[in-house]
Amino acid sequence: MKLINLLRRVWFYFAIRSVEITIAGQNECLDCVRDPLLHGRITLARSEARRELARLRSRYNATLPPGKRVVWRLA
Image 1 (spheres, one colour):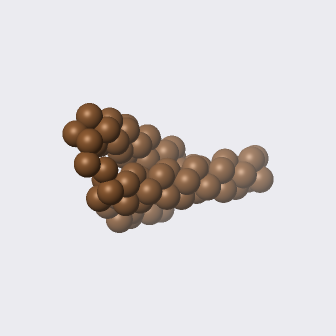
Image 2 (cartoon, helix red, strand yellow; image 1 turned 90 degrees about the vertical axis):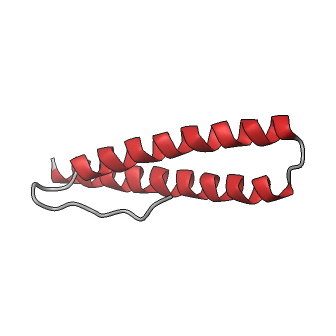
């Protein structure tokens, strides 16, 4: 059971890093985009990615033993 939990934790950590990289890329794109429609779409996608990031962090914390929690920086 510990191995399964460890594998889940590794997968959630990988997913968290992937979403953080996506959000960073979206932030960089916002500086380059001049079209207001595209700017709005990127902003909506970024807010959805932040929600997904919060969900993944919650699931990651659920795999930790009781009393041990990770404090995440803001995305």
